[in-house]
Length: 282
Ligand SMILES: Nc1ncnc2c1ncn2[C@@H]1O[C@H](COP(=O)(O)OP(=O)(O)OP(=O)(O)O)[C@@H](O)[C@H]1O
Image (tube, rainbow, N blue to C red; front, side):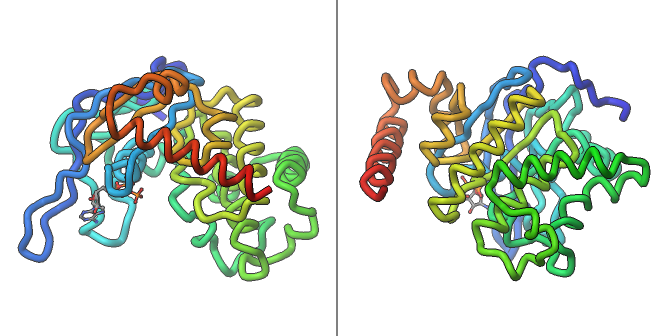
């Protein structure tokens, strides 16, 4: 696709970006992200942290080229300042066609993606879906082998390929959703809380799958996650958001050790407490 540069480094370049939701119900437009700048180098894993409502999902959707990807007009995100370039492509100038093409290069795992699997398809068809939608010309055996490897990593027996989403547990559905997001081998993946609300058994499986994917693809990942296991296993850099702004950006150890912002310190403490709770649960 014209405009996509797979060698772009940084893979993601965000410059003074501000994002808004449209005015509705007689109110004013809402500024969800304000004046945010950062880079993600090619092959790097960046975590976005911050309290609920700090703008993480909004930023993630915009970076993934899904700003207008919603039937609900009031949920369409508009850039009101700056821009973000992902694989050299301006997200601000992205039109509908460009956004559709970009989905082959920039994967987006939306929050609670497991809940939105197509109910009429079995797991096998769900996994093949992203490929079949694009081409009839693919090696079914080769892809089958990749699917079998992924099923093994996430601990799902191959018999599950014949089952439908309603037959799976919430954690199993989420594992399928994460597998599906990797089927097109996206060089950039934006994942919004991939382990949130998922049972303790499924969480490390999802972490293992994302780690496997990164090792084989050297993809650039942006992860929204407060899962200490996921952060420790995958993340190098952390960007902390508060009320739409960036209040910290550093190496994960530096952020948690010497954070000079009160909010970052509170977050680090809360994450450590969660980790201890989980150890206590085991
Ligand atoms: N459709 C919308 N219209 C207006 N405001 C919205 C809309 N969607 C989200 N917002 C607001 O934008 C702000 C940022 O929301 P966002 O979902 O990006 O935050 P978040 O950090 O991802 O939160 P969470 O961790 O709860 O998912 C919030 O104040 C939210 O209420």
